[in-house]
Image (cartoon, rainbow, N blue to C red; front, side):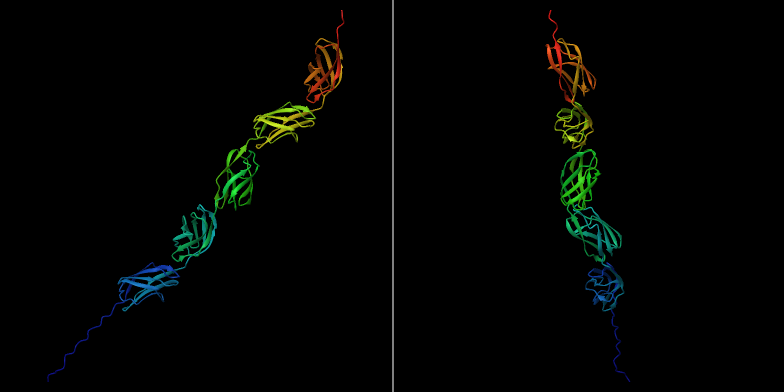
Length: 432
C-alpha cells in the first residue's frame, strides 16, 4: 500500500547571537564621585541593553558602533568589573578603578608676594598622579609631587586671597586659601645721614611694613629694628661708609631703595690760641677736617658761647667761662671729634718793678715780678709795647721803651687777661 503521507520537513536551527566582548576601557581609572567619560572598545556591541561598573549601571552610554561605546562612570569605590550586556549575553569584564579624590589640608607658607615665586608646600592626601596645582585660576609656575601626601609648588603672580586646589586622577581637591601680600614701599628716611660708626636711630616711612623680617643698610642688616605700624619702622643703622641703599623685606617682597649717607667723623688738629681767661670770651680758631654741619662745639662739658663754621676745615668759636685744662671737641652728623686741649689761665698780677725808674731813652732793663706770667703775650709802658722775655711764672725781663720824663703805668697781658698796673718813672737827664 502506497503511503500517501507527506514527507517530514526537517526543522531549521535558530541563530543564537554571540555575547559581546570587551577589550579595553579608557581611561581605566576615575574619581569616586563618578562622572568620568570612559571609552569601551570591543565587538558585538549591537543592541546593547546595559553597561555596568560593578553592580552599578553607567550614568549614561552611547553605542558609537559595533566596536565602541562611550559610557559615563557612576559613583563607586575600589576596583570594579565593567561589563556590557546585549541580547547575546553579558561580556567578559575589564577592570575600572575608582581613585580617592585628593584632599588638601594645609599650605606652608599661606602667604607670599604678589610677584609670585614663593615655594609652597601642600599637605594632604590622594596626590598621586596630580596633573595640576592652581592658585585661583592660575596654574602654579611649577610643582613636584613628593608623595601621595605632599606637593611642593611655586606660586605664580597674583593678588588678594585665592583658592589653592590640586587636580589628580581622583578629581579636584577642596580649596585652601593662599593670600598675596602687597609689596612694601619705602618712601623716606629721617635722618638721611649719620656717622660711619653706626648707631643712628632712623625712622623709615612707607607702606606694607607689616611682618617685616629684615631691614638692611646696603648689604648689612640694621643693628635692630621695630615695626611701629604698617607705615613706619624705627631702625638703628649699623656701621658703614658712603651712600648705601636702605631696604625693607616683608612676606610681600622687598622695597626699592632709599639712600642713607655715612659721614666721616670730624677731626681736630689745633685750637688757637690754646688758652684764655677763666671768664671766657676768647675767640679761638679750630682747625681740622670734616667740620661741615657742626651741631656743637664744646669746651669740656660746656658749649661754646657761639661758633661759626667757616669751612670744612675751620670753625671760629668763643670760649665759655671755665677753669683748668679742658678738652675741646666738635660734633657733626658724622660723630664727635677727637679733642684738643684748651687751658683756662688765671689773670696775671704784678707785684713789683726793679728798678722802678730809669732814663727817658730806650733800652733800660727792668724786671717785672708777680704771678701768672708764664703766658705773657705783651708788656706795655703806657701805650708803648716793650720787648720782653718770660723768665718764669713769677718774673719777666723787659727792655723799657723810650718816653717822656715822668711816671707811666706798666702792665702785662697774658692768655689770662691783663694785669694790674705798677708805676715806672722816667727821669730826664740833668741839664748842662
